[in-house]
Image (tube, rainbow, N blue to C red):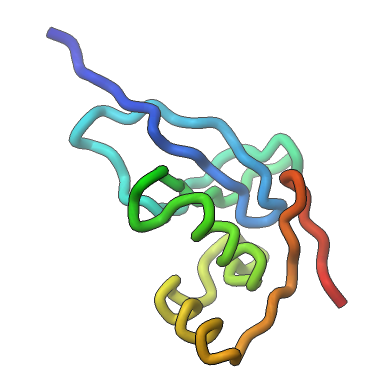
Length: 110
């Protein structure tokens, strides 16, 4: 019997916020939600880090949108703070949004 695969992931570019391709993963060999993966972005026209989101897990699209809008990704596409640290700063009002995700497009505020 052959290997079984799943495609229950979504990838979002850390620079422009657009959705990328889903990647089939062997069952039992999946990456954790929130994992960063280098992929080619059709919007940015270059290789970027993408965040792997999985519906109904501890890190899904709404979590990516929070990180994206609060500018938690560096120019290299790496996380500036852990997601938990970012959520704490947001909860305490110590950080403000720097981007807005609208129909897959982003724009800097101010």
